[in-house]
Image (cartoon, rainbow over all chains, first blue to last red):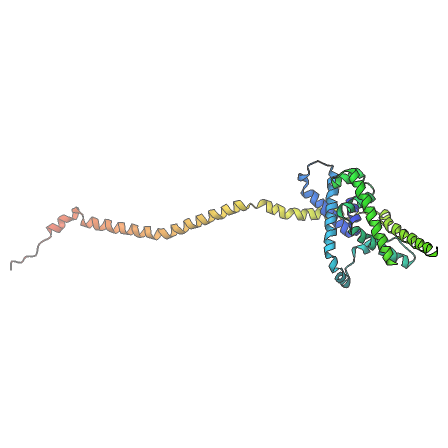
Length: 164
Length: 122
């Protein structure tokens, strides 16, 4: 579950596993500081979300070097997302492009909207759990998810309009 | 009418693209952690623990006091080794004084007085 949570944020299997390991190391290190104000799982997922967001921020900072990375052959994390198997290469290409577009749109969202939206898309998280992870209320989570969806839709609409 | 229909169609196409893109998150498959995930994790925890254990045995305060003690002992030793020749000299001086006192003491003064005086009669 922790690996999958990280995967939702970073869209890359290896990065997600690395992050999950960091999460468990952090849990092991600071278990004595766990104050039992929330469930242990909620505390662990909060660490996972924080680590994932930190990772995305680091990636964003490195984005200016992305062209250089492409030259030296380092893969873009979006490339590792398994695109559904397609017989038609054009379809496979469009899937890859779609993933990159979605990642960009998600990156542009504020952290709390992104977190609420991505966790709501993952099985196993109730709104109450998301609220606990974000240390907010259920109505606030619902509002965050709604706004995130709207923002994403409008960003994607703008992208596909300009694409034509 | 025709441009409207075209616009509607492009809007529909755009919305379909948006829907398809958004559905990626819904269709995203769950992933399974590598079978060595746990082993790697334990290795990393052990590696992280090791420097902490070393650091846990090291007390900088205690080390500082140890250093101060060593410096003090060293200084004391240095002073002791520098003072020792002086005390030896002092001891030898005392012995010499004692000897001269022995020979110049009242016990021997009798012999000094009894010594024959040179005769100048001739």
